[in-house]
Length: 179
Ligand SMILES: Cc1cc2nc3c(=O)[nH]c(=O)nc-3n(C[C@H](O)[C@H](O)[C@H](O)COP(=O)(O)O)c2cc1C
Image (cartoon, rainbow, N blue to C red; front, top):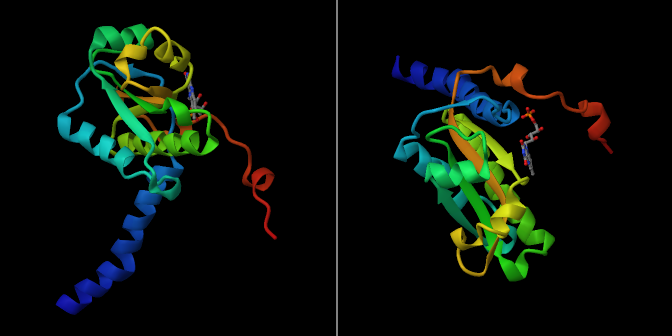
């Protein structure tokens, strides 16, 4: 009986679990309708760990994450922010901020946190629009010598179907070439 259960686990449940985690990556959407409410610390920590563990060229991890929780500050950066929304600003050493590699690495950390937040049932959205302002009048919020690349906004959302909520995409035939 025990052997049968282990076999069922290997043949049915494990592939289903793998499908489920791939599903979280395939199906996501940039949240539009955030609602007020606090994100608990353990979910925030998990999102941050997804960023910490992101891959980077030569494993240089050229990023710093600034977690903006002060709602007055958050609303100055994203005017329609809701109470409890958190901004995670990803910055890199200013000297490297023009290097495609460093910017790509930061983008991967951003994407990892964006996806992790949604896998946890939170809403998330990536922004570059406010980056000029962050590198300008909010520069003091960043670690000294660092330049912001992008930010991830996380917060509570009403439960939404990620398949229909996402904007349309180009077709796979338009994008993928097999040789
Ligand atoms: C690098 C990057 C920068 C973005 N900047 C902004 C932004 O400044 N403001 C905004 O509202 N959305 C921004 N977005 C969100 C995109 O508009 C959104 O991910 C895209 O349109 C797909 O939408 P969907 O998730 O509804 O399918 C950004 C996304 C990325 C990846």
